[in-house]
Image 1 (cartoon, helix red, strand yellow):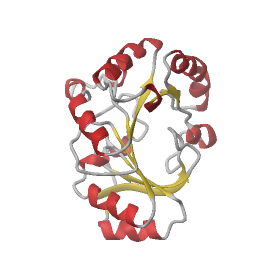
Image 2 (cartoon, rainbow, N blue to C red):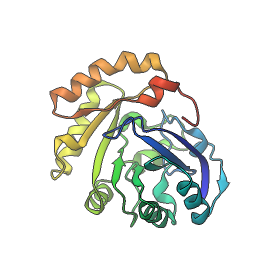
Image 3 (cartoon, one colour):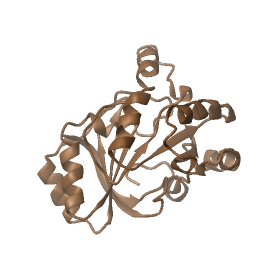
Image 4 (cartoon, rainbow, N blue to C red):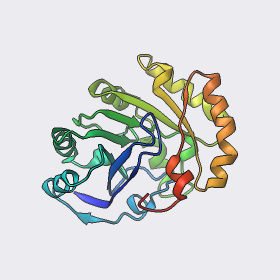
Length: 225
């Protein structure tokens, strides 16, 4: 599988924020989000080939209790279910971060599913239509949340984005509001500070959770953190 980077840091988002984690970032994505913060996995994918055994050796040598399989879109990788299973055999708690647009047999301790809203659609004429058609896959999300524990994590650009999020929750009534997390779209600490207050209030008003972005607060928009 093509791997863009492997690094140890803390989980910055969602219910396990602050947990020391080993991140394995796959390269390749079927979307092209306008605000993508890992363009080296999507717009200009790069990386090196790793086998599952090579990755498991890396995992076994890490003291981090959590493994985060992320991307790009990790569910595009055929070997990902095997990798996730072997990480769990090693006693690691496994999160798979996905946009929820690809069917997979993978099982994990947490699917952190981040459905992309209209605000993610790029202006690029080669990608805007394809992205818009691909990003909305409620049937796939439904399947994933039946396979493993899951949360929905939405990236908020404007207050009006809440209408799309509420539409998503109506499509997935088995998910309680406590399984929904809102976080600001931001690439800098300044943008994060500007948006966090009203996104936090938006979450509170609707019974959702506010997700921090600790890695951005602590390190800035720096690769490998």
